[in-house]
Length: 504
Image 1: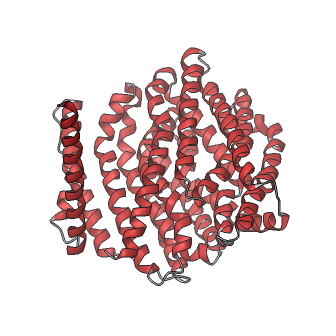
Image 2: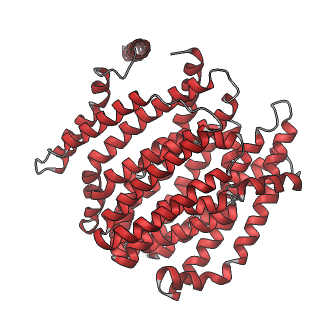
Image 3: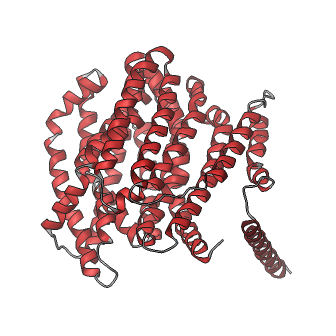
C-alpha cells in the first residue's frame, strides 16, 4: 500500500468515523422511534408520513438547487491563501442563494391544500403541508452549514450539530406522538422546531466567522451550477421515491407504509457507510485530483469502500427479519422481505459517487442531468409495468435495475473526461463472498428470533475471514493488517496493565 493511499485512508478513517457517528446518531431517531411509530401509527399513517416527506424532499431539491454541492465546489476555486474568497462563497451561499430559496418556499404556501388533495387524496391534510413547507424554508440553512464544516474538515462541529439535532428531535417526537398524541402532525412539528432552532444557531455561528459579504456574481455562478441539477435531482429522487406513490395508487396506503419501513432499513447501508464516506471524500477528492497518482488512489479507495459497504450491507440483510420483528409490531413484520434487495440497490447506487469525478471536475453537470432524467423515465416505466402486477417486489426490482443503469451511464460519461480505474476482479470477489454468505443464512431457522439472529450474525462476521483465504488481499495489505492487529493488541494489553496497576 503506497504512502499516498495510506494517508488518504487514514484521513478518511479519522473524519469518516466522526461523520459516520453523526449519521448513526441522526438515524438513531428513526430507529428509536420505530417501536413508537408502530404502536401509535398504523401502516397507513406511516405511508402518509413517508409521502409527505418525499414530496417535501422534491420541493427542497427544486428550491435548493443543491446549494451544498455548489458551495463545496466553488469553495475550492480559491486557494488556501485566499481565505477571504472562501468566506465569500459561504456567506453568499447563506445570504444570497439561501435567501432566494426561502422566499420561493414561502410563495408555495398557498398551494398546501392542492398538495394535500393530489398527494394524499384529501384537503384535510393541508396543515401538514404548511408545516412541511415552512420546515423546508428554515431547513435550507442546515445543508449550507454542513458544507462549511465539511470543506473546513471540522468534523467535530458537524458531529456537535448532529448530536444536538438527534437529542432535540427525539425529545420532541416522543412528546408530540406519545403524550400530545398528535400523530403524523406531531412528527412534522417536531422536525420544524428542531430545524428552526439549530439552523438559527448554525447561521449565527458561521456568519460570525465569514462575515456578511454577498457576491451576486458568485451567487449567479452557483445558480448556473445548480440549475442543471434540478431536473437531474428530481429524476434521481423519482428513482428513489416514486415507487411509494405507485404502491399507494395500485396497491394500498398500508403497503406503501410497509415498503417504506423495509426501504428505510435497507437504506441504512447508505446512511452508515456511503453518506459519511462522501462527507469526507467528496471535497477531498477535488484536492487529490491534481496528484500524479490520483487514478491509483481513486481505484484503491473505491475497493476499500466497497469492502466496507458490502460487509455492513450483508449484516443488515441477514438480520433484517429479526430487527423488524423485535422493533415493530406484527402488522409491520412483512417489511423485512424487501430489505436485501434495497441493500443491494443502494450499494450499487453508491458507485455513482465514485464514477462522477470527471463530470464534476469539468463542471459538466449537464451530463448528470442526462443520466438522471433518462434514469427517471426508465424508473417510471418500470414502476408502471411491475408494481400493478407484483406489488412491492416490482418496486424493489425496478430500483435495482435503475441504479445499475444510472451507474453504468455515469461511468461512461465521466470516463470521457477522466480515466476511471476500478479493480474489477477484487470487486467481483467481494460481491461473490457477500452474496454466498447471505444465501447460507437463508437456511437458518431454529424457531427462535434471538438464536436465529445470533447464528446469522456469526455467519455475516465470517466475511473478513473468507476474504482472507481468497485472492482478494495482496501480500502488502495482509502485512499492513497484521501490523494493525498487533498494534491494537499491544494497546489493549497496555490499557489492561495500567488498569491492573490501579486496582492494586
